[in-house]
Image 1 (tube, rainbow, N blue to C red):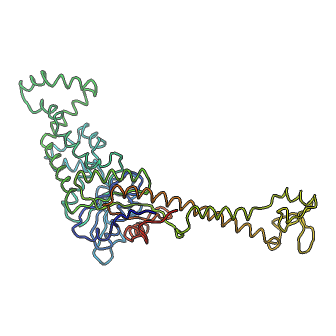
Image 2 (image 1 turned 180 degrees about the vertical axis):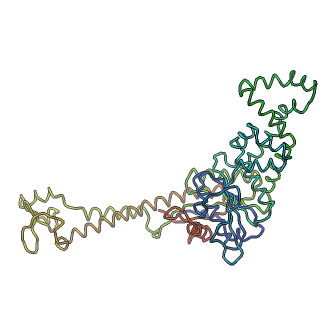
Length: 449
C-alpha cells in the first residue's frame, strides 16, 4: 500500500479561473497530450470560456476528434460546443511555414518581403530548419495572445525527448539569426564600394570559401542574399522570442505535464517538472493518463491466482484414454476419477437408463452430464480470476511507478484520468476525458496486491 499521497490537481478550478489565460500541455510522445489539450478545450468552453486550442502534433488527430475536416493556420469554430453560457471553442493546426511567412510580411516592406519569401535558403529554413517549428509555435502563441479574442489558449506541444524544445528552440533560432555567422555573411552587402570588396577579399573570402566547399557555392550565395534581406529583422527574432518566453513565465500561464503511468513516461515527466522549475515556468500539475482500475481491489492478485488454481484442480476434465482403460479393466470409475460417466467401447452409457448411445457430443442432452457443466463453470471462473490477477498486477505496477514520482516531487498536484475502453474519436470521447480529468478517484491511492 502506498503511503505517499500527492495533492489533487483540480482541473475545473484551473479552467474556471479567469486569470488563467494560457495552458501548455507538455510531455513525451504517446502519452495523450493532444487528446488532453482537446479535452481541456472542450470542458473549458462548455463551462463558459472562449477557448482556442493550438496543436502542433503531426498526427493531426485533433481535427477528427473535433469534427473538423482539416485544421490549418486559422482558428476554426468547433460546432456543438458551448451552449447558452457564452462559451466557444476554436481549434487550429500550426502551419510553421505560413507563420514564418506572416512574420516576414509583418516586419518587412513589401519589396523586401517578396525577396525573402522567394529566397531558396529562406524556403528551406522555414520548411524544416531545426527549431523552426517550435519557434513558430511560440510566435503563433504570441499572436493569439496579442489578438485578445480568446480568454483561454490551450497549447499542445510537440513530443520530444529533449524535453522543452519549444522553450529552447526560440533562443537557438534567435541566436543563430542574430549571431556572428550571419553578421559576417551580411558584411559584404552592408559595406559598399572598394572598401567592401577589399573586406570581402581579405577576410570573408577565406571563411566563405571554406564553407562553400562544404555546402556549395550556390547555397552560400543564397544565404548571403537571405542575410542581406533579413538585416532589419534579425533583432526582431530575439526580441519576440524573449517576449514570448516572458509570457510563458507570467502568472496567467499554467503548464500541465502529461504522462502515462509507465516508468519511462514518468521519468520524462520528472525531467519536465525539474526543467520547468529551473526556468521558473508556472507548473500547475501532472495529468496521469490511462490509469487502470478495478471494481474488486480487495481481492489481491495472489489470492485470485490461488483460487483459480483450486478451481482448475477441482474441475479438471477426465482424459478419455484413462476412462477407457478403467472400463476395460473393470475398475470403479468413481475411484479412478472418471466421475459419473462410464465409457464403453464405441459409445457411452447413460447412467440413468443404462442405454448405450453413439458418441455424438452435439446430439447429447445437456442434462445428461451435469458435471460437464460444473467443470465449464469452474474453468470460466478460473479464467476470470486469472484475468483479475493480471489486472491487479498492472495496478500494482502503475501505483509503484506513480509512488516513485510522488516521492521525488511530493509538491506536484496530480489529476488521474481513468483509461477508456476505446480510442477517442469524437466530442463525446473528449467530454468523457474531461469528466475523468475533473472527477477525483474514490481513493487517491489504490491498494494493489
